[in-house]
Image 1: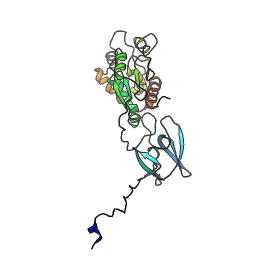
Image 2 (image 1 turned 180 degrees about the vertical axis):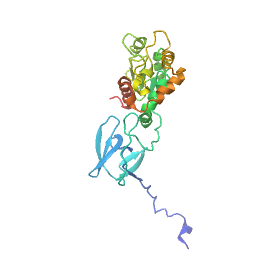
Image 3 (image 1 turned 180 degrees about the horizontal axis):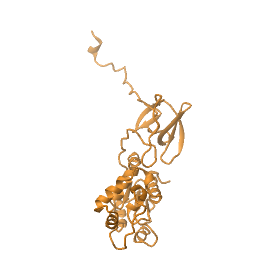
Image 4 (image 1 turned 135 degrees about the horizontal axis):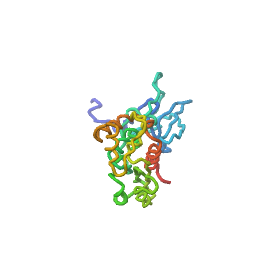
Length: 268
């Protein structure tokens, strides 16, 4: 009688799932399951791989079979074929992760004061935020900030970063922020009246941002002075002029980088 008449050989055991081999291309983000270190491949040296996390820290790991995780699944890193291109850089200046599949959103959030703020943050840091699984949401003004924070219920695993416009000594914004004392909330800001001013004038082809009289709508005044039409048309001009962090003033760069660090690095 043929052997298959007896059915499946119960003694043969289940075949092990083959662990895929992935070329250790610069920019590929992997995780070392033993230490939890997550970073982008920088280079290979002497049979080991150098990884760099988003804070610029480097660590060296052996290229062991099934030694790393990609999207939570074990993989074996192998030497890439020769002739590969150098790693690409994202708009924020970080190593760009090719073929990125955004992580499931984490509980932590970053809030900004409006649609324009959110679009500018996305333009420069969108790649980094998708790698980290962090969602940016508009706050629509700081007056509601204490109430919104209470509703959010921050915690060590659910941290909150807030970017505030015109955060200067003695301002209404500063008085509101001074009331925030939760250790799992970080508020940073920039000194500009509007997020438009955080874009360098040279990037939009002007020598300086116009001075708008106190009490007048700033965007309307700027567009009138520069002949940019309506504020929505002016904003398209401003946003379209931003291609990387080099087009952004340092005050905003530092404020956003601190928020991303805060919501992605667990508190000791």
